[in-house]
Image (cartoon, rainbow, N blue to C red):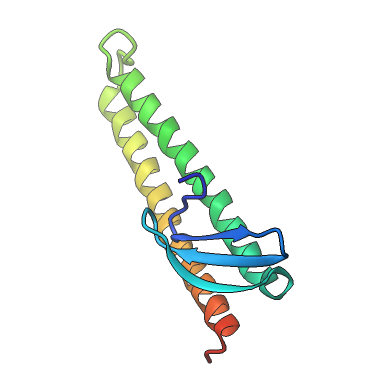
Length: 121
């Protein structure tokens, strides 16, 4: 659970210098087992996916917190509440539009890298 990211790929180093790459968000499926030095590109992409997930998670928490705090009557801006809400939701939609294609491209890159490691074209 600690290596969750939106691509679903994770890796585990073993003491003998081998690496296991797994796919799946909650139920992991064994994808490949190979020496760690052969899978550096896949490792780097999975680390990038982990970092990207941390950013996405942090932004989600920030937006949720700001929404909850600003929805209470006492802390709500007195003037221009509708404009504030519209700008907030437009910013949220813009971030989602940025997150989704980037995450899909990253997942595709990881899949290609792993298929090359498996010997696929």
